[in-house]
Image 1 (cartoon, one colour):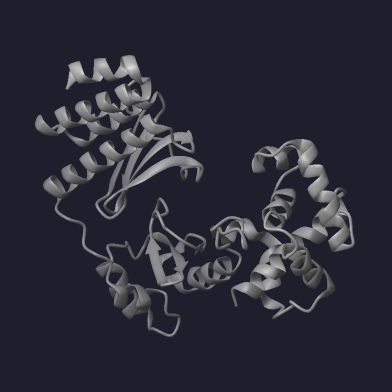
Image 2: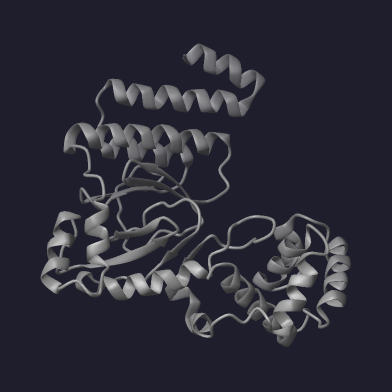
Length: 321
């Protein structure tokens, strides 16, 4: 394997490095290495701190790129690279997207960590949908919710948060679980107050985009990040408002229009929007001029940008009632 990695490196540096990553984690598995060694290997190979969190089995490890264990409190940055290791999450404290080597480190380290966790601590119990529904049900008696929380491995005296998915609720304590598709995440609250977090999570889900060309934007939304925007969800359907109708008209004019308007709304300048869209600044200026003509207002000043942001939010609420 080492000779093959050397020969590949002469032809393709990334391929050679990825093969060395495979060999490294294979050797760790053959020697029955522990979780700390796996996380340390990920950190050193990626040259950035790495962490492994499994709330169900109360595992929290963090190792710096120098190989030193050093846990820090606080949630991980959503932009960091991460991979699921069963119910656990392995994170490289570096923003994405991953290159081929980082992707291989994540895949191999997460797989090795899951194998060690299953071998040494038993498989984590699958989430019980009935218990999840009970723990977020405001009409259920507190004692019933407390028992459901214990079945889910939650400390009734601790804090947890609810996640609203299109398939139903999930709950977690500590680091948010990895999710796919649209999701709304409620605030962390005492476990017996999870119904309030579930209500907030469902509101946040309505602001989550599909992540498609027709509905670009963040697919995971935290209720805590909405602030006063959450009040818009209480207004009912406002798709008939002139600004929303104008936005629908503009969005249907060209396939690039929704992503362009979303980028203009989300960034601090047209140059930053052009960078996010990976188009030339002059190209974006032409697109924005066309969009402004269709909208009927400028999006280049603070007032016009706020109108655009509100129209986008109301349009998304209409798409996801």
